[in-house]
Image (cartoon, rainbow, N blue to C red):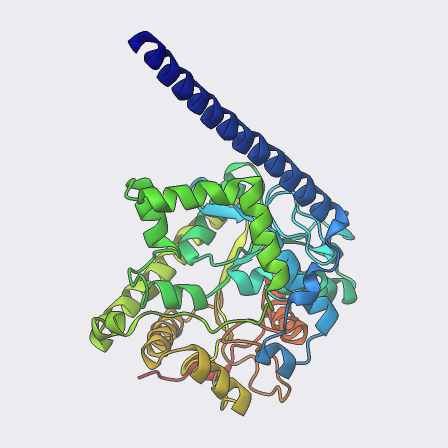
Length: 422
């Protein structure tokens, strides 16, 4: 009797276990099928199956103000989101090698392609341009980057030049230096290298993380290296890499209205703990780093036979432009930046301008005056430019590098650059 009862219990337990195993197996099988289907859908999407995804993007108020083409810009915004950055030793990240969209193309070295430069393969003169997202060409197609406009300018003068765009989203001057040194290490040598920066260093060095010379995403990368990620953040990170995670992100991308959001500075608590005095100290340290890197690359240039220019880019802050702000520019700053973050950027520009004035070297160039006589709207945010704005910058760069390329008379520095700064 007891044996019969035990057999009955074991039979029920066995059936329960089998049922659980079957259901778990069914769940696992279903997840595998879903995962495979998601990867298939993602593959089709990247081969054109999601041709209308760009339509969900919206132009920012600034983009509308500078009259950027709506269809092209939406495509560009989608492709810039679609093109992923990958980890790269030493300078930390690169664009996805070989990415090819309608308006955005990346070569196998993770560098943005300059289409008009590709037409000048027989040109003997070479110019490298490096910088952050403004040099890279955020918001504009390949043909409208500063690099491509520069190639057009020289070709139009009958003096074609090969122009390489080494700009990268969110790069600071330290990362630009490393990327250039890697190219030189590999045996490549240009005639001129132009470092075009100020905006990213002005934020990351003086405001957040507020350590002179440091890069963006500092805290995230620090936590990864020091293995201080939480189990939840690790799980989320792994999930994002799966087909299901990527498909979920793609669906959300399609459902969302991609209206640009304000630039997120930092919390009120953060701002309470950062003083103008500390910002000023960081700005001075940044300016010295900027100058030291210029001298380092210049010394390399003397050995390898190229010339170096460091350019302070224009930006909508107190020392980033020398003309009065337009009304729409004031509105963009008010809606997207705190007073203290703007002060930090302005302090960085102020100190770099002091260095430029004190050094009195034609290879240190202040371009914050470049739009003084331009009445049209060119800034679509605090420092990114429309195609027209990029063209104006490219024309100015062409003028001051011509002596190094062709031995032409040097262009006189702007009088504004030699004014005393407070």
